[in-house]
Amino acid sequence: MTESLVPASSATGRSRRDGTPLGERAATRARRGGAFAAGVLAALAAAACGGRVVVDGFEPPDGTGGSGGVGGSTSAVAPGSTGPGQGGEGGAPPIPPLVEEDLGEVAFGVPVPVDIPPGTLGFTAIAQVMTSPTSFDPIGIAEIAGPGSRTFVTDYTLPGTLASFFNQGIGSAAVPQTGAAAAVPLVPGTYWITVGDGGLGLPAAPARLSVWRRQTLDGRFHGGKLDINAFIAGDAVSEGYMQRALRTAYQGFVGLDVGNITVHHLGSEWGFIDEETLPIVLEQTAEARGRPALNVIAVSQFGGRFADAAGATPSAPSVAVEHGTHLSGIVVTLFGEPEVDTVILRHELGHFTGLFHTTEFQARFADPLDDTLRCGDVLEQLERCPDYDNIMFPTGGDLSGAMTLQQMTIVQASAVYRGIVEDGGGAAAPLPAGRTPSPARGAPAPAGSGQAGQGAAIAAGDRAWGASLPPRAAALLGGHFCGHSAAAGADFFALLRAVGGADEARLLAVGRDPGAPVQARARALAAAGRAAAASASAPPARVLAELQALAADPSLPRRARLGAIQGVAAASPAAARALAVRLAGDPDSVVGRMAARAAR
Image (cartoon, rainbow, N blue to C red):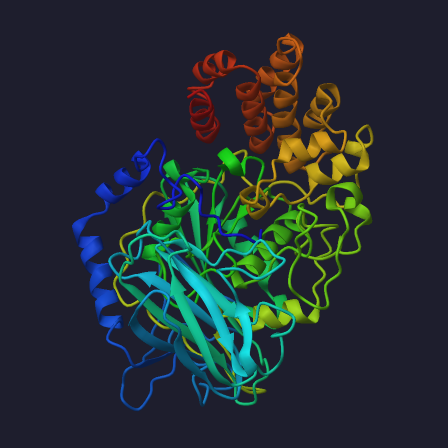
């Protein structure tokens, strides 16, 4: 997705219904503990003093930087990694790979100069509301201008894209994010950054601006270590599969190695995520240690505007250098099929570091790169699109995960990893989070039935399960539906119906087919209920009865059962309430909880 995931119902100025703020936001603010808020505010106050802070394991002569270890509920170090508090195989880097220019409090609408020296691969500008790092007040990067009067960000966006560089309490933008700027090294000189409130015309709140600059000795990429904090909501996925999926997806991705993986456990209440709860679940990453790092939150199901999505990233780019904010991670649901899960994780990391969809479902919009191909009409052409093999195609494409040079350059220029500054050198050590994390919540996820990680991957081209469907419908069911597309207004069922895939009988057949990938089964059953609800007459009793039976069948994969529950709720609220009672004591607690939620 290319636009910010600020829900229209949650951002100040766009979040008021009938003139009153959402109760969700008020409740969220009320539940923030005093100790937690005090700790965060103290950290912000200390950081707002101005000056330069050098991070990523390098301590400058004046002692203002530092390095340290990482930790959490469960920690693992990738083979070949040096572990906490050390440099890489080639020794500690002679210069800091990642430098923060803390510009302190800045005024809205006033350009602030930042000097970018030679050797810089890229930089990320981060604006925050100083009163609270988890504020829901809108703030973002209104403009970035550079040497030669070049403009990189204009009016919080990039022309021709769905980019929106403001969010709730924190906003970010990066250079490079366009083909014109994707040069190695970046053009040095003075860049001017303007902070604003998203153009909403609200009273200006105190704003803090920081710029995180990635550099090497020669201005070229030399690799690095990607540290990951994995957060598992309830028993959304087994810890073992989570670690395997992360290593499979990210080891060697754009030339990076997987560094430290630390697993945390969240309560089961975070298993269901929609547009209202997305920013709140990202706040739960406050307990993470080590920076920079990618926070990955695995949940059981997406709903609301994100229904049928497999991943959601709050903004492109998001923030890897501060935990617990509304931009501090990606949220995914994993299916236990490594080929598909790898695409989900890489696609969302692409957004996290600043990549957009090569082409959007909205035909007028595409990414701003020079070396990616465009599709005239994604929905009309789909598998015939010239960019269908690209990892940033809006559905994940053919799952081959191709990337262009400019796409790789943008990921490599981001602040998501611990860098290496020269050939043969070592990666910097992690920077501590700056405070002691709160204890991990919940117990380790059991390896019970229905968990991801069971069963073999199904090849992307093996679509015998979808032979009765139009090819584009099968491609949609089996692909990656991205939360960015949902935030931009794409509705999965509407897309499916537009390509002729809304036939209840055929969808039920896919849902029953044990040879179909689990994401296709889940989406097909949810769509069958919506198709029944859209019928001119009352929802067909046969469709509803079959969905109820599938939802209650313990032999089905969990994901398929959850899709059937969604289908029942779409077809008949009364039937959903009856199903919730029936499943209240189900051996799979996730199924019982999701049935109860669907009946509300």
